Length: 403
Ligand code: PLP
Figure 1 (cartoon, rainbow, N blue to C red):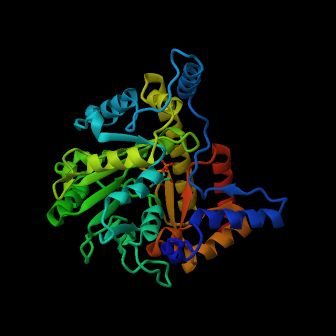
Figure 2 (cartoon, protein in one colour; figure 1 turned 90 degrees about the vertical axis):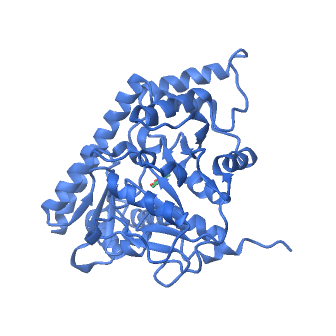
Figure 3 (cartoon, rainbow, N blue to C red; figure 1 turned 135 degrees about the vertical axis):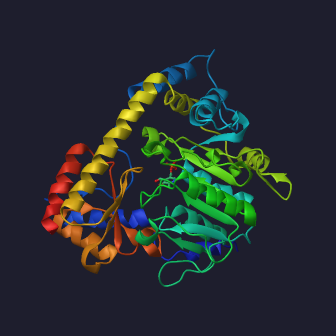
């Protein structure tokens, strides 16, 4: 008889956002007259920018002509997109990344999970706590995370608490990790590391022969003078892989396009990880569609850059409105400056899920309970700035009901 991957049985509960969704749906069913506003799930709301739509239309038309039709594309991505990424996201900032170090994909979620194919099952992982749940969950599936404890944490995983006292920046862990996940700007706290902080992490990783998996999915939201890429730090090319995504940058959550940078200098026991990843992708992945890659290329056109920036500004104005509104009613709110997330301390020692239920009843606003991002998220909720201006303003008004 066939067997299953028993690691799946180590999951304690359902995927965080599925639980949030189910609760919101249940509430809506029982209270059909109430208008729910979601500041919970991190999906964008603005439509795709016109320059990007034009590029998709043109590329679709090319696919309908014999002379310009294309079948399977190159495994790493089309040259036109690799060039645009290398030029705009790296070389223009003085970071020398070449096209053959970039791999275009359908998402940072798949890349940051699939990358685990390259690593030994014995490697110890360290994660910021709280953080995007996919890092730990994908290690649960592989069997690297360990057994789940009653508080939801996993016994072989090294958690690096990011709390108010350390400005939501992790400290080096007591147990030595092999794989260090760093996510800046951080989901959910909105924290962003400065150059010196990132340098200490690169130096640390090099000193213990660890690898940094650097998730920069929210890089486009950085408004302060902070590094946009881990590769701005000297030595990072020897110890880091970087994930980027067009999802939040340009509203591609439904279109799907992202990329991963694996420097040629990055080696383990003499083996180039870039070559391993190429082999892995060639085996398990057949690339991102031509139309989507043309859409991603248009993000870097003059018009595309401007339109995308306007959308990011819109979301970040929402973030400022939410933060100010919450502070105005005496809540402690963090983030919202370099990230579209506001991390809020629950009042009166409310648990996160308790506060979630309370807000739903009292305001019909859906938030994300902090403990879904790790044990140190207990006592916090996450709000997102991705809703419309109208709903954001209304949500801030409704928050006053909890005074
Ligand atoms: N990384 C982080 C930190 C995220 O918050 C998200 C999405 O919410 C992703 C990656 C996933 O990005 P993508 O849509 O490219 O799969």
